[in-house]
Length: 273
Length: 312
Image (cartoon, rainbow over all chains, first blue to last red):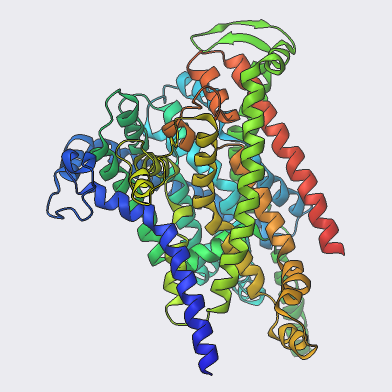
């Protein structure tokens, strides 16, 4: 027994070491976000800053809140749109008796291979044509599209778990397909819906390249603003670290709060059931 | 005589009512599925066809109405462009080296987390370990730019304290390549680890017990039980990572911009520069088309392998 304990202890220490490597860069960045520029460039480094120094954050929020809002709107819009499209489709692909159902599902998944760079110029041209360039709507449309394949796929895997008898019972009671979906299947799959929403949210929130293409001034998202801190000659490390932390906060919170969903989403997305 | 008729017709009715589940309602069914398909056609298929079309023309982003059909000339000039070939080479190297490291380290970490899964704090630890893969790649680039900065970075300070010479992390070609790989490995090993852990967890306990009864050593278990169990999930992870790495952009954009020289130029950054710095969208589109073709080839091969493994 004690040998087991010792073994566990060693393995736990190893796991902690791995976890430290995974977390250390982020911890150091977080510490940097509370430093003045003088503290950031000082050697030997200031290890623990004064955590009441919030100027980096307040300056950023004051000057760049519209771009944070853009990020949030684009992300929420894309999440809502992707869910609205993916859930009925996934439900249909699971429950409708129709020819070519599997082929259709495979095709939807295969569109995930489409690299955003291959769509960037055409989307730029299309959005320019309909006057949506540099608008949050363009980002909502693009992000929802690029997340659809994954969303449909994960939604299919959890909608499959709704017992068929329950759906048949609802249909027998005279529910239309739409009612069966909204009143029966979806309430039974809350955690699955959370999984899809979490992923679409994080992917859209993290997106940078398309935002760089499709926005120029008013609709710029926060990552695009962060990148502009670097490209303008002098590098403002104090703002960079604070903005990196602000940018990473939603994903961090989601990972810690929803780890079960993230684990199931990642593995479901990878595994064909 | 009237009473038996009623139940019979009722039964017939109920039989008919069961079938709508598998029949009619076509309009609703179409409304469930068609929007997604149209959306994907509009957003991925159409842009791709458009890209193919653009790639066959000499056309600038600033003067889109003037297109000159040049056939495959863009592709020919790509294959003659040293910078493009370098970007392909760099991307391939990045894919191979970082995937190898991600699988090896990911397996080791997954094994450790698998062994301690009964400990209460292990779950919390694991979710912290998983964090890097959820982070905004651009912020990850910024973070490592800060840590590996030659003058104010903590990494070189620590190296010097240990009596080691400072490393020009992004300043010299080889060092910059390694730095980019390390950032990639740091961010994505958790993903591999998560997949492998899922694979390990799916091994039935009895197999372990049977192996122990048969006197199997730990390396026997790894070789004959665990590796076969996680092989196919690793391959799936590889497919997803290859597709993602062909899109690798944010981190190089923010840290090296492909430099020094062309040391860290990758295909997506090359396409971006053609499109939005030189406005040569014909050439940029040709790169994009090639990236997709490579994705399809790699995926087809990998899926083929996967089927073979599963059929074994």
